[in-house]
Amino acid sequence: MASKLKVDELEGVTTAGSIDVTTGSTTTNLQQGLAKAFHQTDFSGTAVTRRSLNMASITDGGAQHTCNFTNSFSDIYQVWTEGVGDSDHTSANRAMSRISRSASAPVFICEASSGSNQDAEQDLNMLFHGDLA
Amino acid sequence: MTSILNVDSIAAKNGTSPVTLTKQSAAKAWNSFNGTGTIAFIKSFNGSSLVDSGTGEYDVNITSAMDSTSYSILCSNGLHVSHNNANTSAYQNTASQYSTAHWENNSKVDISYMNGQIHGDLA
Image (cartoon, rainbow over all chains, first blue to last red; front, side, top):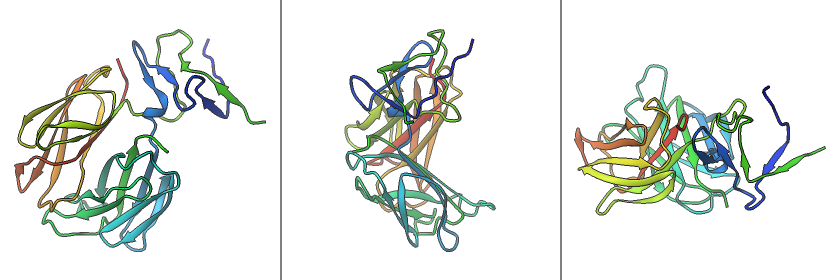
């Protein structure tokens, strides 16, 4: 019989922020696997963030964007990935890179294949993993 | 009433099946590493070792293997260094290793900071 436990909050006993989860023949750490921040933002005009987690704000500086986290990371080395796109794929050759590390407000820049700085256009998706402070 | 469950480990009822996180999935690995000179992890979750497999090309081994090669792998280059025609690719070599490469102007080049994230099911 399937079982479901309904609670509002889970907390580790030994370490508050650490709970192991079985995933078949091995275990993985639940909190380590959870994304700590993400956003999907349309930069084609006035920046509009459609979905976000842990983003107090996203500063639109043309091709340069600052992700202002609500809850800071434990250090400046968040692990992040990104995807840039739009409906006609004209921005498919663009990529983000980080120009300033920060635990609370890292700064990223979008570049086209030519090497010139470009707006991220319709869709910029970013995903962050690591430990919160 | 707010409820808090204090536990160290959560297992499926039968002890072997994956625990279901309703309407969500956790990453099974993420890594960042320095890809120039002597390559080394900067941050790692479920990463075991790195292999410098050529200019701009890296293999990343993970400790707990995925259940197959059908997992999602995303990689991005890191710090800004005048990227011309830059691209970062990723490929699932095996259930316990992915490869990633960084390209600029149609040639693979070493890069100082690489990030990768894996989603899917562990073995």
